[in-house]
Amino acid sequence: MKPLYEDLWISTPEFPAEETANDLMMHGFMLRHPRGNLLIGRVEQLLDHEVLADAGGVIRHYFTHWHEAAPGARAIQQRFNSALYCHSRSLGPVSLVIEPDETFTHQDVHFGDFHLLPTPGSCSYLYHSPLGQTYLFVGDTLTRDYHRWISVLVPDSNPAELQQSLELYRSLRPDVVLMSTPRVDISLGRRSIYRAGWPRLMKRNSRRWICASSHCCDYSVLLR
Image (cartoon, rainbow, N blue to C red; front, side):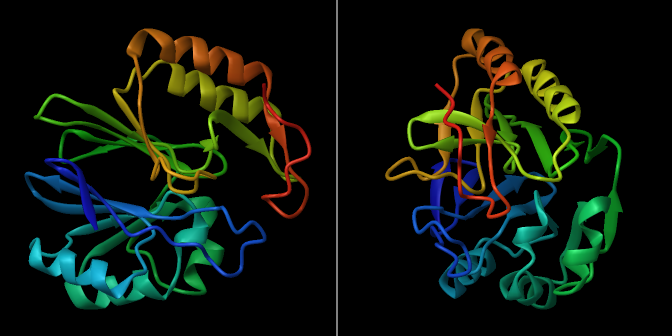
C-alpha cells in the first residue's frame, strides 16, 4: 500500500485473471479514521495485509460491489476481526465467499462522518476528512476509461436509476474521487476534482453513458 494523503492509502494494483480486459485495475483504500482504520474495496495482496497490521489493523471493511468478495477479504476478516458491510443486493454473491456482518439498502452515516450512499448496482461512500479534503469512493457507478469519465450500463441496469445515482453524485461536491475499478495506465485510481466542474460533469454523464455487453468490460459505445 502507498499513501495518497495523510489519512488515505491505496492498495497495490490488482489485475484479476477472471476479467476479460487486462487493463482493468482493481484496488482498495485504507482510510485512517479517528475511530480506527476503515477499508473500502478489494485488497488481495498479502504484503498489503502486513501494512494494515502495522497500521493497527482494520475495524470495518466496506464493499462497493460484489466483485470485491475474494479470499483476501475473508483473510482480513479473520485476521483483524473486522466487521464487513455491503449492499443488500450484493448479499447473494458475496455470501458465496464471505459472510457480511451487515447489509444496507438506504443511506446511513457511520461514526457521524462516514456516509453510506447505496446505488442500485454498487455502493458509494463519502467522507469529510478533518484534514480538509472530501473523499468520494464511487465503486464502479462512475469510473475512468483512461482519460474519460464514464458511466456503464450492463444488461440488467436501469437507466432511470443510473441517472438518479448521477444526480446524487452531482450534489456532493467532492474534492477527490476514488475508483475501485478504473481502466487506466498511470492514475492509480485517484482523481482530484475542481468543485465548480463536478456538477457539469455529472450533468453530462446523466445524458450519455457507455453500454456494455454481458461481459462487463466489452464497451460498445464510447462517451465523448
